Length: 164
Image (cartoon, rainbow, N blue to C red):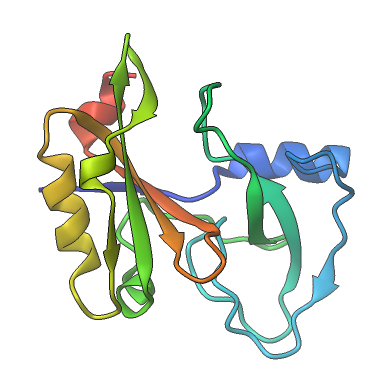
């Protein structure tokens, strides 16, 4: 199965940077990364020492409803190479919670609770996401950091993405 992976779309980040405000309405406060290693949501890479970053409030949900949430993510504030849509392999080595979202009246806005699960580091995150996406009730899967519950990325299949 081919997965289409998205973090924070570049257009969303550019809009926030232009306004100076994140999805939570807070001011964006850039900082210089001294050590590297932050998992970035703009390019789905880990930061490098010297990168200019910000921790911002971001909502990965294109829909409104009770499951829509805003949480902290780390992004480049300049010089982001973007994301190519492929699977970010470094997340295979991080504990992740995957949340399945389904179709309710043509919109992806309902959690399919029985498909949500914890995937431990090294236990096959990509395979777990592919398995969940084979369920006809599921249209999109979100991966989240286990400890902080920060949004990591969203996964769909190219067929599902073209239906939107």
